[in-house]
Image (cartoon, rainbow over all chains, first blue to last red; front, side, top):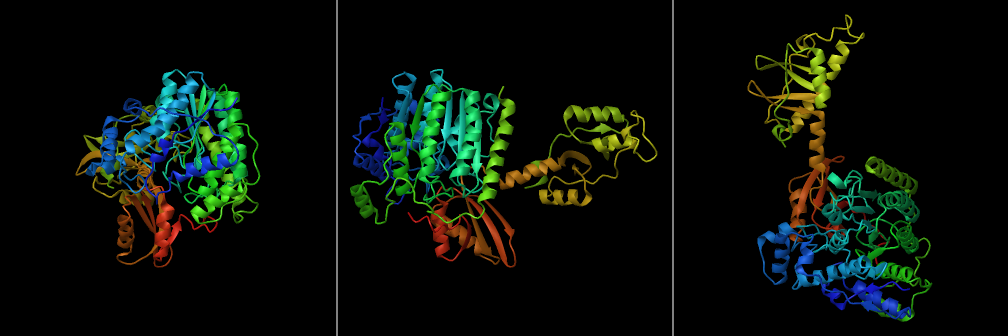
Length: 378
Length: 211
């Protein structure tokens, strides 16, 4: 049985302009690649999220400002809410556009909570930086948290897994005191990378204590170390928490080609991560999982990584070479050479002299995280 | 940041006549290590858990004292104190020089607060911490007038908010400047700063990342 895929052309409306890295071209390239690979695409049309649904996690004062900005109004206090900043500039219709992405993730969550599907892929969303009263880091509304809220309201225990290279701070803070939501984010350390949080000592508060987990990685972390500490940290957490469903943010910006961060994954790593997460869903969450997209700013890497995600979820074979017409079309359009193979060539980036030290540090960080949360796992 | 911003207030105190045993129990109960000692409402000494343990142990010069000894006989005095309007770095310097763990804070004669080493660590975390989602930019600036203004001018031009700023000397004639900026895309700024000749230390240049 194939995994339902949620997508609407309306997702392309979420567009901060041609110079902005969070570009809808990423989706265009991905869909075009999947089609060129010979896989006819069938989408489930999402329902646009309503204002009330957005309000399930965002404050009235914030939503009102997004709506005003969306209508073209201006106010000096927008900046206080993260709107009209360099990262999250105002564009006409931004409220509606953001609600389409929220609607997609929420539709995916509803399909799982109603038993209509076990796994669902939402080809969009993953706006993990948005906080209850703050737009941040390209994210206006937090689709993930709206979906998580829906799931917990249905009485489900949710494990949120975030493999984006940036800390999933918005989701973490929104559910920081909730016992029914485990959040797990593995990212480049906030010591070096936006948003600056996601340290091992952030473990939740009140009833949520011990249920918010962070693995901040050293810059220049490579495949083996990443996979090692991902398993080290995540598996015992899921084994203990026993979620009913996973919500997975599949940001593709931990790839070595990504222009915004310093983690050095190859697509080979993603070809292991996605099946691993599926195994975890099967072993610890009754096979239920919602997968969303997220960050990812190298168009070359991002389209290959998300194609991998799609192919993995549909149990389709992984091609070696990418279709020539696709390479030609997008190579010409972007004006630069694209990697010709799904998997990255050997030696694609210079050797990292600090490799062993980085591996040791990452292991230590994962241990420190487990040490600080384990006392609360009773 | 001033002492009054980090000190604890009101302060728990004991009278000179209180016994070592009673004072030690208060420390255990409240999970503290230092208590100012008062006589007739005036600060006359400081007593620490370590003072009490030493005074009642066989290692004490002249032998162990009974646990009902009044703290007035064991306390440290005269007391090194601070003022609420002292900068925290001044308090830190005094505590380091005198090797003391806590500084009672006086306003005139009146005891108004206490600052401990832990409070200073807390201040350090506040000064270096991340209050808002932000990226990190580290630039090595020449140590001369206007350099920081030039840098912040560049950021202002790009509509980038500065959340916090930390500078410290790095070698002869230059200053490391760590700026927490309200943007995810610090590489874009780094690129532009490098083009203008700035020595950007973070984020690093990555030649492979051209795609």
